[in-house]
Length: 300
Image: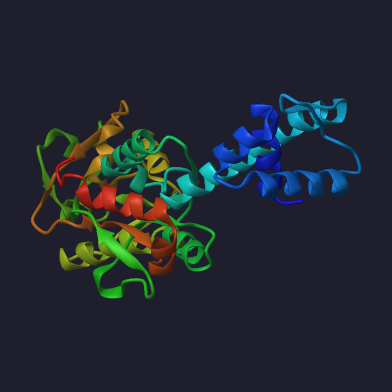
């Protein structure tokens, strides 16, 4: 039994006449009658009673009609779903991000705009560190990810759309002497207890901060580690130390924390949207995200 047989049956059932059904289908009446007879033989029961006026459904034909309409509707829905997925209007997008990247206004705005343009796409989000995101991109577990990167060590085998570099700020407790200043050089943090995430959680930011501090003539005294920027800021508010954070983190206006612009050499937080070239080539929803990110204005 083929779909065309079901469509032939439906046309005859709705027209109640073989001649009109044949004209509707664009085939001859004799071949249509032969196809219906073959269908009846396959089912082992008559579907129509031939009359002078045309054709009437038997009881079995009436029951078969209900199911045929359901099957053909399911087939049409399946075909429509396939077409929408092929156009990137449906399907699933698996998107990763680092905890610090989520503070960058480009990230939530891009996710928001994507959902508005393609609401039928299921968005699956995953938060982890850059190393985990890169591994997930390479093994196909993620389609795209917002990652931190180092210009001198770009991840091999992936395409990066780099966003504007983000300056970093000093974060100090509100009661700290530096909190009274409008800005301060990094070397003002020499000897201060410093709060930072483990290097394994974000090597690019970690290395950038330590490198610029060394250029400023001192080494950090990391006395406390925290896994996320939000945790670091809360620990600064608890007066456990000072830190350096991406400027976008300053939207966390916690009581007891003051953010200061940095004088002199400023460490930079670098953010990019990363995809595997093959994934973008073969997955329309990923191409939509890439093109949308490319069209997003540079100014937050």
